[in-house]
Image 1 (cartoon, rainbow, N blue to C red):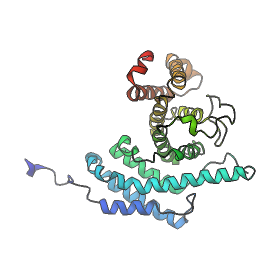
Image 2 (spheres, rainbow, N blue to C red; image 1 turned 135 degrees about the vertical axis):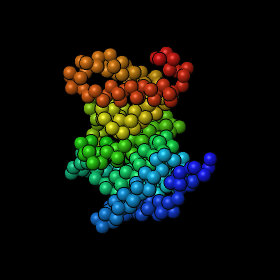
Image 3 (spheres, rainbow, N blue to C red; image 1 turned 45 degrees about the vertical axis):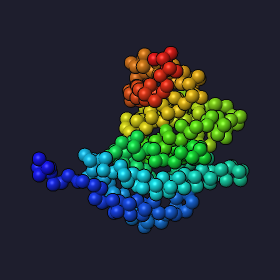
Image 4 (cartoon, one colour; image 1 turned 180 degrees about the vertical axis):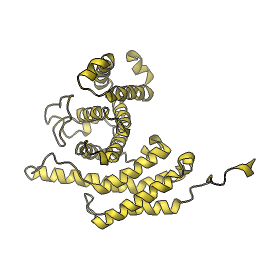
Length: 297
């Protein structure tokens, strides 16, 4: 029987060494905020294309990647974290110096995008749950990651992998085992942002309000960013310190959206939001504590 096994079926991750070398080159350090030379970026993009070609070979045997995922993710998350923290640090420095000339300027980080293209391909092959656990869980990365996400141009269809990766990373960071309000630098700094619109990056909206609002916006997308937003929102809403107010508020909103789908479409709300809300609810009831969710089930 074993003799009939297809010769093309791999028994192990054959290109491991090449893949790890590619990831090291893709994650090469530049300036603190991610600046690399144009020639280096061209080389990085070629390395990304080669890595994607390697990974596609293992779509049907993705478990062969499991022993190597941590080593593959380490250089990616290390460099991505440096870029994100550098970008956030520059924003804070400019604010302390008396403001910014372009306070709502979109972030343009081509190397970060290349990194998240790789992350998406790994998620596509092995599944987001297996990949996301290798993201940083450092509390100090929460606000910089959110700020980078807020600074993205949602209308740039060529950089959606960056938004996907940031949402997935945020879904891990919101589960930090601390009261989320104790790590919110904006508490007491201003009014909450209205739930109907995304807060500008660096605004005084509370951390929780900002995360809920931006995830809600991404629930209206039609691609993988919607899936990542649903996961991120569910991770936040099922925290013990979110269940009394924030979760109930979202459930009320979800009931309103799902009970009037026709009227919502006529009002201009995309049908994709209904799917996004349902995905979030499914994730909430999967992640949450049964006893606490019985009252709203």
